[in-house]
Image (cartoon, rainbow, N blue to C red; front, side, top):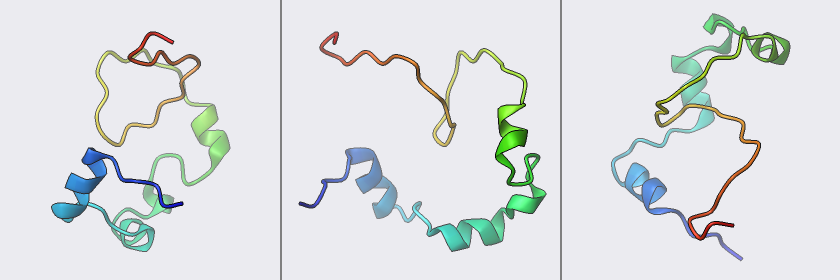
Length: 70
């Protein structure tokens, strides 16, 4: 069963904004990122409260409310 792409992903593909992982790592090598590719560096990062999120932000969600209130 093939999963249908969301409108966001369809648009991203149409505009050529979706790149393969190899290409992304060539442009943004993990070794040059502040976390150096190590999960313990990410987990030890100080927590911050955010009021604004952008595409590409990674967030961990404890509870999620659907639009129908569930």
